[in-house]
Image 1 (cartoon, rainbow, N blue to C red):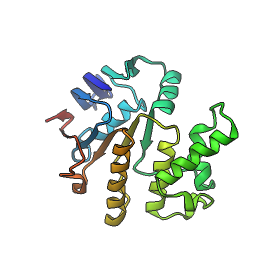
Image 2 (image 1 turned 60 degrees about the vertical axis):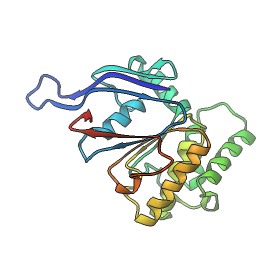
Image 3 (image 1 turned 120 degrees about the vertical axis):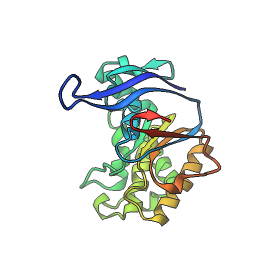
Image 4 (image 1 turned 135 degrees about the horizontal axis):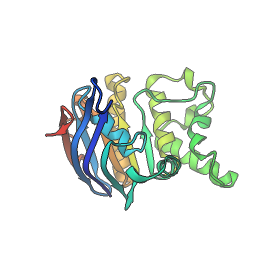
Length: 222
């Protein structure tokens, strides 16, 4: 499903302030696995997630996702690939202020040529899975932190992606809402999504449904 080979990410290469964010990462992730990437802030886990999502390019190395080397794709192709294959749950939610929950969730569908009934069906299904349908007409700035997270989850699901990535998803949540998110991961498992979570939250430790834990320290997999 995902194969990462000899991956490096170096910022300010060949300059005095050169910084290696990822150092020779090699990783295989199978379809429908739930993976937790653990590490302290600055360890490289969020950079790795961003590269898998195609949000930034590696300095060198390959990222093969469903037989496509996204490290070699032009930006426009990466954007299309990400929109169709990957749902990303951001730490800061990244919702569009001034729009309601339904409008935020439908945003990834705007450029797709689908009829209105299918459009509404996909948004409604995503809202139901994320348990936020009852707030579909609420402006997102008026949602609680947990509700914003669920809206972000629904948006990540609306294109029915095969891969779900979550970057520090509980960083802005209290413990109760963090536990709700962990329950949501079980739903992703039932939906046979490939899930990768980057976190340093100890609530994610020793979860029975997680297939694999990966620890990163100082830009390397331990």
